[in-house]
Image (cartoon, rainbow, N blue to C red; front, side, top):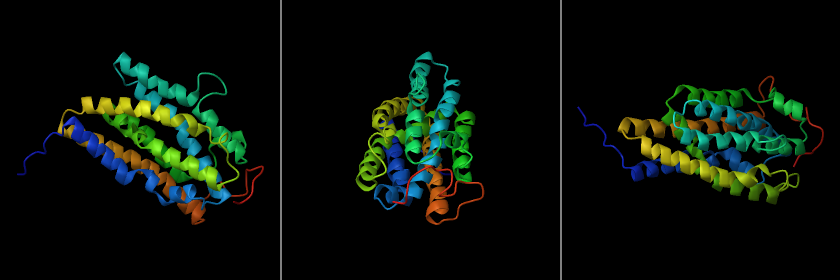
Length: 253
């Protein structure tokens, strides 16, 4: 019988988590490389923004689910800031509103975007799997799954610079969602990383944490797989948005 795996130190656990991001984060996906390098068509950018809205809209629901499971008031005080970041404190504020300004600029009506009727089945399945994961797994695993935020500031910088350089139909104003995310993601990932390092005290818990982050990376990757299949390979599934429909302006890049 093989001997049990040793418990990782907190520093070793963090190294393993960061290695997971280096190997699995969706900045490595070919769709993001195409998007950031200016190779995407206008319709592909539209499809990305439309489908990504569903992920953005479900994040505060996911975070509210986690919030209800936190017994420590100090943790709840910190975690609920995430919901305010996305929902905003007032009408017309917050990350979801800023994302809708992006879809506005790409020719979609708000009613259509908010209805989510045009999103890909792969988008819906991946996002809802993530919410369900955070609802049913341990609190430690749910918090660990958010650690993709450790890696998001770099991809945001790359995305904004690349899109502004290559697409004349976007601007700093229409990409305003990304202006605040690096600071927010840094704050949130620092809290989550500290929580995970303190509470993953057994090797089983540490392995569960690592698996949770791998799962979240797969959720993000699966969404881009669906976009590539539908809008680069042009195999749009029934019911999903078709380029040229439900848009009021714009032309191919």
